[in-house]
Amino acid sequence: MEKASSACRRLRHLLLPKRKPDSVVAVATSNTQAKFQNVVEKFKKLSNSGGFRAQRAPFKAAVRRLSRAGHFSHVEDILQHQKQYESIKNEHFTARLIHLYGQAKMLDHALQLFDEMPKLNCPRTVFSFNTLLSACFPCRNFDKAIELFRELPAKLSIEPNAITYTSAMKAFCKTGSFDDAVSLLDEMAAKGVGPDAVTFSLLLGELYHSGRYLEGENAWNLMREKGVDPDVRCYNSRVQGMVSEKKMWEAVALVREMEQKGLRPNSYTYNVLIKGFVDEGNVEEVKNWYAALQESSSAAPDIFTYLRLVPFALDCIGVDLALELCKNSAGLKKKLPVAMVRRVSDELLKHSRVEDAKPCSTCILCHILNLIIFFYY
Image 1: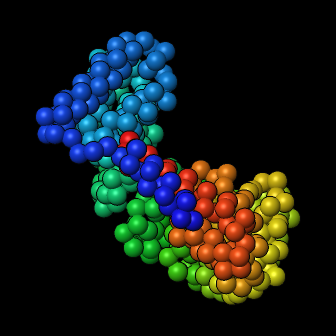
Image 2: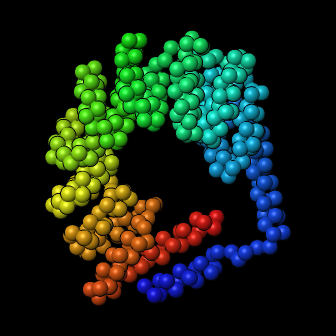
Image 3: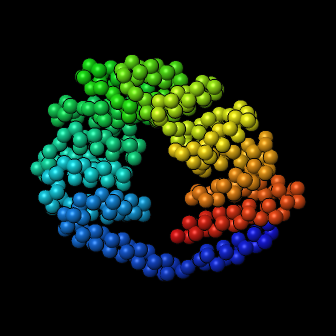
């Protein structure tokens, strides 16, 4: 462990830059500005190609990179630039721009572009309206989404569809207005709009995850009455609700029902059950569900699996399993916290298992190195 700490100090000395003079910082800032301006100019030049404009990935990558760096004026520059092309008359293309403004958390620009669509000879239908609603969510402006939902359809002669109502339900739930969200099911029925599994998965997830178990059960029963077949997300939400209510064996029965209907549990399903049995201190069931997850063809252990299992193994099972879990987690992109791995290492060293502790020391070293590189770049 001392060697690992020493190595970390040497790495930190090598990788972390010394404080630079203000003049050097100013030059670096200027170079960064020039780099981003160069990205914008290249993007605008490529936009002359219709084939390039038809691609989603370059737009998404450019907007994400610029907005994360705080260059919102550059985001506006490349998206405003698209108005000169014939593509802007295509609703799906313009809706993509609205979506990108939302992803950049530039809701005012998304609203402005939606308002400009008639002047751009671009039709406005429920498709672009739904995109505008979705643009409110990355900005966490749920009240605006509700306002748009209540005011614009009648004003613009747009008929809301299931996607519209699902977005509105999400907005109501995020503001804590669960009764209003549930009441939208009646409004949908009155307008002949049938909810689907996506609608119910959203509603069930919000209700169960907010501790509104009985309301979640009512929504589940209503879903079955309407003949909507629950998907994996619907089942997962109900399993989560049951686990939160400490109804572990009912949750297990529900997972078995899901499997009988041909739906395969995913990592989230297994993790919820593992967490529930961890909280109960049920060692055998924790082992059983971890083994089932390892053997599953539709799921695999992830970081959340190990975050729950490593401390439980140390407290209730033994350091051997904790060490095995640490080794199994090594291939994940996201690593276990250093403190958790160090705890396993310390436990091994208490029993003079120095050789077994070495992999843990290596994990700690790599984790710290990754952090240094992350913050430096």
